[in-house]
Image (cartoon, rainbow, N blue to C red):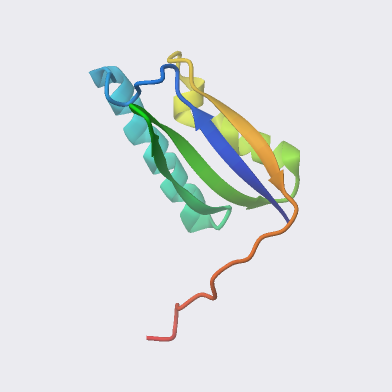
Length: 105
């Protein structure tokens, strides 16, 4: 497996503060898509990062290769929308993960 950092670049620097209702509905589909990928095991961490007057999105994924990371990014409903979002895909040559606490409760 390989790890990648995906940075979701919004169409405007003030997004989501100036988002339209249609954009926010698309963001709900985007969030559901990544919840599904987290449950399936390919997404390790996903969420917004606030910076300045706006935000961008991030995901750390564990997939076979860069093409698989690109396929995840390209299938995201927010990228497939006509709102102008895109992902930057950056390889992570190694990763340190916190041990899972599942089953230890």
